[in-house]
Image (cartoon, rainbow, N blue to C red; front, top):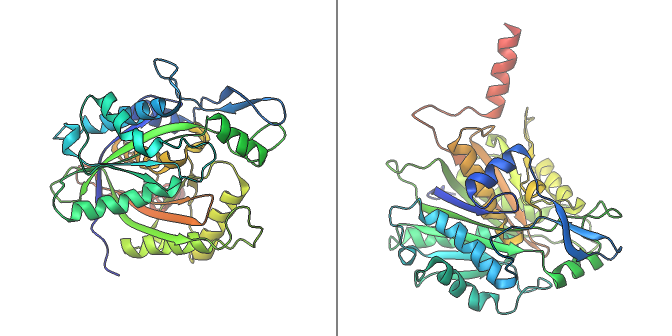
Length: 365
């Protein structure tokens, strides 16, 4: 398969429980800082549920808060664009899937209007909402790539906003024992966040610290809750497709990043997929998971991950240039992507294995 034209990530915006800008949030995530605290909700065990809440200027709730978080992240992206008018750049906004318990029914219809109100400007007429949960971010990247390839749009913004800190949502996940509590270690901490990334087709004269080189999608025949034997078939296929599109092997990747947030099923699936695909030993191949600091953020997961990678590439603290990322919905949808940090000031980036080998060699000498 011919490698697809890379997408250049030119800027990022991020609103999370640990910061109201990408700079603040990424610095906190890099340091392992979290803001997990008791919420105003009580779990099925009678104790206060712990979550990661975004603290805005006023105690907004519901769609109003989602719109304000999304507008803040999108506005931060627009500030990095040459053309800073909101109506000049299409925005693809990812939200929770319709099947999500407690999702606001009117969310797809009113969210863009709320974002426009907060930005004080109309959005581009080809802006739209994508309702596919965590994998929606990868779907939005694919749609953005197609839009950019048409040549009609020099830039596209992919954004995501989500919140699990909603009464009916927490009630449903608590009833299914999927939240992390004192009595249940096999669960996640609910959070909320909004992220956005500014995209363009990569060109040699375009200053970009991070590229998205490949995307892959698949279906998992044994999703969570079915009781079937998990072999990570869907994630394996999605990763293979992303690597093929990037023209790489798994052994070429230096590190991983994923939307895993605490549940054993998701970590087991990630481990099985790598075990089935990796054919050569690697010195380092660990996993970044921003949910450690901001909780489960659903449809905002991929913009959050790209914002974290963009900050790390820009400030040169990535453990290696090539990252494999993957996402999984509660149902059978799976997605994967491959990013690569570009050389800074003409210097080639070393992989994590090369750095490690160099350190060991110097010690031996």
